[in-house]
Length: 67
Image (tube, rainbow, N blue to C red; front, side, top):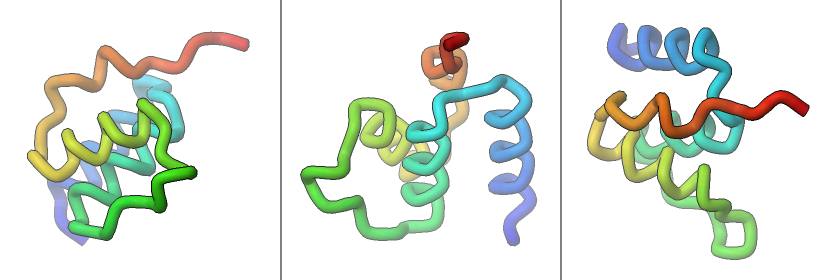
């Protein structure tokens, strides 16, 4: 697997980003088709867009809140 992908995934996990954002980012980065409309969330869509653009700039915007 691509080292950029590995490093970004590790960084997202360490930052405790929302899971939906991570899944979206990974799918976008790898060029997977977007989920069907009823399963798309705001976090997933943002992650997909960032992953497609191969950017990590928006990671701080998607930190998971404590529950």
